View 1 (spheres, one colour):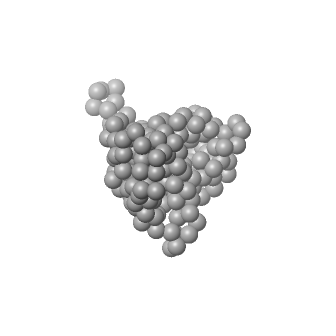
View 2 (cartoon, one colour):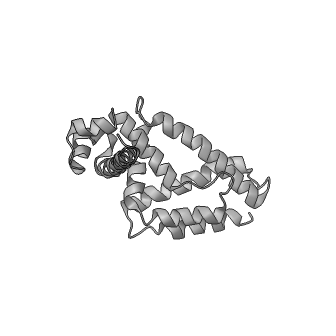
View 3 (cartoon, helix red, strand yellow):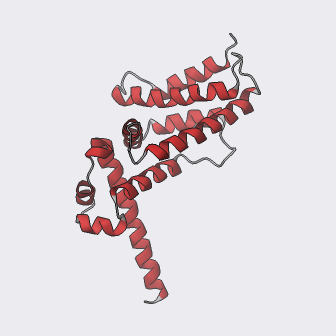
Length: 192
């Protein structure tokens, strides 16, 4: 096969994989991981289930691709997180409910024993807490105005971000996710 044809074939395959991941994201958002089937994802992209298996050998490999892509969308170079960037990320998330819904569905399901996303989320949350502690340390030093250390406050920051997502998904007309996060940042900076 000539070099140009190989490049074109690879590009088409990568485009198809991206299309499958987007479809999986939609199906998982609608049905949850356990309710999502490879057949439903394949149908959404106009493939047979066998055609989908050419790109992703298992449902778990497709799940990993969805999770990795989701994290790429939120990627900020290491050491570049700041509180104002977190506020921008919350604002950005408010513009993409499907991705937030998929994340929330997978996160909720992952707490069950044996769920294929459990290891991913366990590792991810360890890294996120460490990143948030660094963000808080850069902003406030070794102690926040409340007296908490960055390590003690980091899980709370993560909990607020994720909790706001769930509340917003359930009642987007009543919960101003970006506004509430700004309020939390104001609360963080208040003296006791």
